[in-house]
Image (cartoon, rainbow, N blue to C red; front, side, top):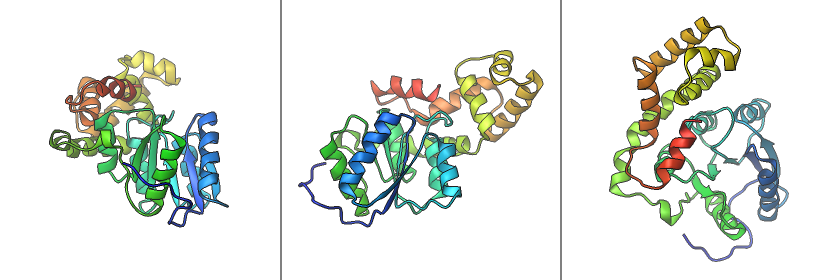
Length: 241
């Protein structure tokens, strides 16, 4: 998507929250924002939990810039939780994750746009103009095809179920996807094995599956339909972290 250079965005962006766990990138993003939105209040969070705390303390951003790869989320469940918390606030996802399937799921779930982290400063400025004016932004290489659209509803349903997991269940689900047995999960999370089994029983019920294998398959199949190509490997690695 191409735009003519702009001097000042048309929308009224007075407050932005940046959610990114890489300080150097977050600082660079804040600097770029100050050049686009003069006198803009910028707050930062390094995790979804910190972002929720900011909102709980009264932060009311006009825009949220959200990185998918955060330490306390699985897949796009963090985005879904944030969107549910602030449904009327545009959320621009900026991430190094480049799977077309994941991007489609984000847009279908209500993202204001998706921008790869390697985008230039000029592209970022143009995207901010779009979003501040109420338009959505999606790079040309991520435009939908009929094939991609077929997998979107299931993806949204699975990720909504993931968003409903408790933080402890989310941590356990990540370890299940990594192939860890109950005993190893208990050791890594400093829990009794019986407690881990209780959490797994609860999360299996929430996901509507019968066992750990079905849960891991559901997480992957809900985010990937296996039709995209080279981007799939990155997405699978991300979803199983």
